[in-house]
Length: 85
Image 1 (cartoon, rainbow, N blue to C red):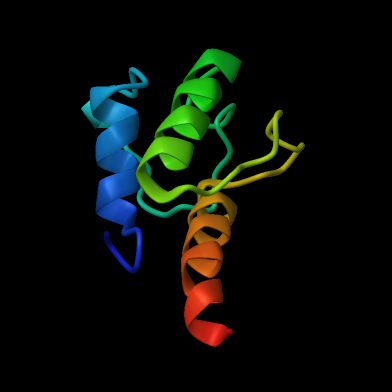
Image 2 (image 1 turned 120 degrees about the vertical axis):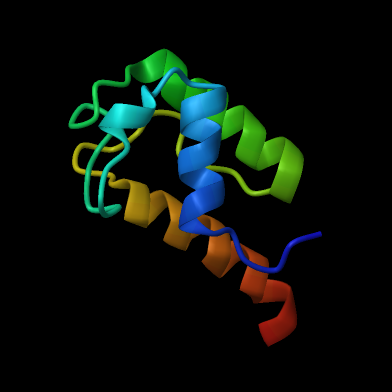
């Protein structure tokens, strides 16, 4: 299992599975799903992928202002927790 989720992996998933057009790929992760034109269905797809791939639970609904950077940090911090114990 990967010990860190990368920005390329996150954005690749959004392009391949959630419908993010490659030309709309953001230059940085400080954007929300709304900012890049994705809806709650895309978030649910991402939530399911994160749970299946990493065993990490994201909030049931993306909080207002929950950026892609926040999502990646949530996943990566959860992946580090067992190492910290």
